[in-house]
Length: 215
Image (cartoon, rainbow, N blue to C red; front, side, top):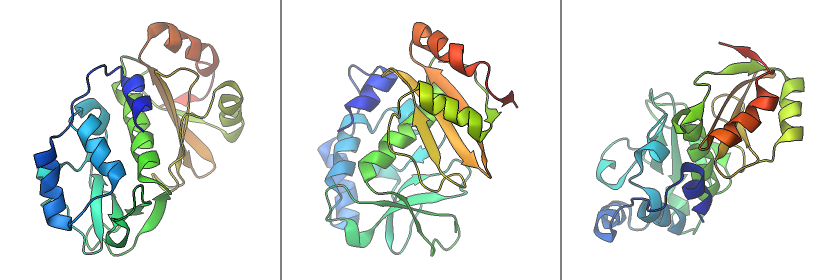
């Protein structure tokens, strides 16, 4: 389910949590979805994958943050929003993920991703834009027309996020080690890109270096 993340970050022996550590979450909530359990076991301890920009909530951190109706699985790095699974969906193998921008009461939730596994893969691509070794280390503002150029030259890597940051995020790239992140925002896009291999990064630059305005 998560082999694409291992390939993206070049993880031959990824680090995960033990069964006893994951049981701490089960004791709090009664059960957890298979997609989350598998993620914890296979990649849960990989800091670059899970904690470069936003933060995966891991088994020993479930005392914070809390919500009455959701198991919160991810937190935005400044606490602007939180992502969670409805408690009524915990019996599902791969449930939807919801986001709240009500960081105080966490009472209003919107659909972010139809499947938890899709959400976790998308968030890994967000982090790849910052963590992979070959990167411009900056964002570019691009137009809808320039976004169309990216879509025509590169393959869609995974399902989009629907709400974060404001109008969702798309992901593209032609190699397993690539990530192009396009954040939709008021008709334009904020774009960054990175790769795990220099040759692949240079290939990306042939198209992307002429697009957008750096900021």
